[in-house]
Image (cartoon, rainbow, N blue to C red; front, side, top):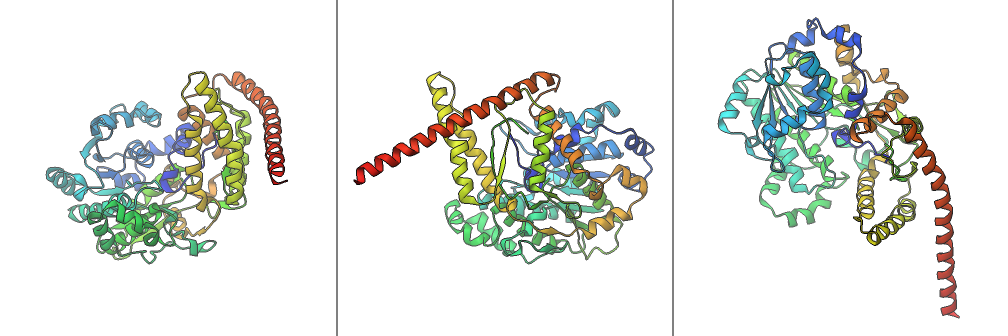
Length: 508
């Protein structure tokens, strides 16, 4: 299945595999080992507080800080979820293969992590008074990463989690007696609105789509039904509730950051089973994607730089973008499909191919021809043989995701990253090695190859040991695909011709 890379860190969840697959190069380990680089010294003995630590960016941040720096303590805000308490969720997080190397180097790294039970959708982040006081007395650096990243989430949920949650995190920062830096992770697409398509988006604050206090009050007091009915008018030129709520959140940061050491990180968009064959997108647009480890490194360095800066009245914004080293959407697809010819998986259920379609009506037509009609046929076969029906359900989810992303995969923007470039150039050579976020150093074919291998190994749980079997299976599926496609098109043609003949007969 070809999985599209999606916005900010909604998108970055799959790219965590890239970090997991890349070997820990000896020269990076050698650079980290002395522990005396300027950034390492800044974090030495520090106490950090992280929201969103159980998400993909949060996991990366936890791992890199503990592996590259000598922290005193790390507080991680975690809520209960699906009958699992925060401590149980943290245990699951730390079992991720991402932490394998850290486990080898620092077996007791988890002793540095303290759980804070809370929820960003609640007042005071759902923290107890005792925990609030503990954090405010001890913490030096806050990383506010947590957010609801679904594009189709109800506006009430988006505002309470993303906007009010950011307000409450900043209130915590205001109470921190020893705060050196507060990093808010936004998204490059926060202001990628309909009226800005094809234009440059500098690293600056923009006019808020609505007054934050009014939006939060509406979310707190109005019913879901009323808010849902008002949503199209409220979000206006923003394509979804997610980017709208992040724009409102940035206005909260702008107004509350006065006299606080705050910065904003705006990351851009951070496999082949043979399921998805049609993608809603324009192959000629410049898709702004970045490796997740670079987003993570930029976040760590931005906190350091914010603490060094004397001017707390100006909030720096850093856009982690590939605008200076772009890749076309179609080129990315080609690379992944070519990689799939070499890194085949035994988990494939059909021959993998995909086509980018930028016209929505053509996309809708082909979706029915290549996705839904075959899905109904397969579900019918499943019903006859007593197996669970799942194909229509799968393709409905695929279509929902593809359409949600369609605004961003059929348009592009120019994300300026001057501040980020200057930030990279300002740090020491050793820190440039340890915390690299130079987008010009990215070789896309190599990175996407690692990414694809990581997806197969870590998401599909395929250890890649049965390469010959996987390639034979792929060859068989390719032959079957062409045979079935010819038969399928023949049947559709006969059915279409039959319907036309019947219609003509009725009209005569």
